[in-house]
Image 1: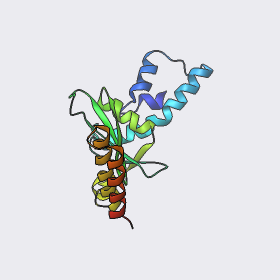
Image 2 (image 1 turned 90 degrees about the vertical axis):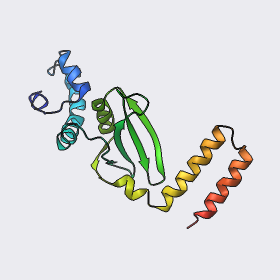
Image 3 (image 1 turned 120 degrees about the horizontal axis):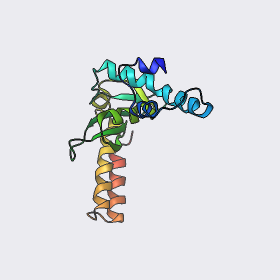
Length: 164
């Protein structure tokens, strides 16, 4: 508990547990705190490295070729989102109520390896271009602008265009 108390940036979830009076000497509470503490170290490191604001900085997943970064939500200025991507383009996003919670989510999910410029680097590749075109086709199909047959035909054309 002392190591957590000395951290400059404390994970919101763990800070809440400590404030509720979780007993580190209790077997179950101690186990949960140990699990929570595992992510407190990289959270504190990332937040300190960027003076408490790591927005727009890419972090690679520790075990797979995926990346994430935190940024303010466009639709709700008080919220932040974690944006996920791989070599094929943007994958998904997740919104949180604060930047701290978004960073915490990113850390808990394993995106802790600093990789500045990853999005710019990957977006120059053929896989990203192909993925972006296919995502556009999926969006058109989902909005009713393309039939399933039109989508399949255009998807085959994109695949042929980017065949290695």
